[in-house]
Length: 108
Image (tube, rainbow, N blue to C red; front, top):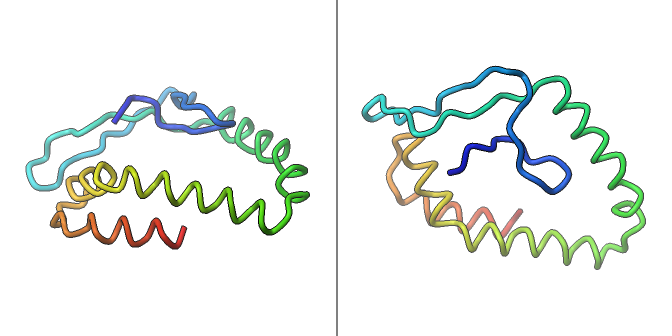
């Protein structure tokens, strides 16, 4: 995983709060990653991005929306193994979660 922890307006960025949080492997206490936390500026940017995107999204036909959501699910499915590995490590859960991640992506 990279260091950026916010995804706003189609790009990854570090949070602006000046605070960080450690993502810890519960099986051994090892820090997997340190992420920057969102600040008020990040929330404002996310709300602004959502407001800017809303007219296009609300004007899209159900078929266009379905196509976009299906593409999101496909992309999540492609990364299912990576996502499952991170979640398995973060939750100290068996890697059987990989199958659950792929299954969940189908219904995203």
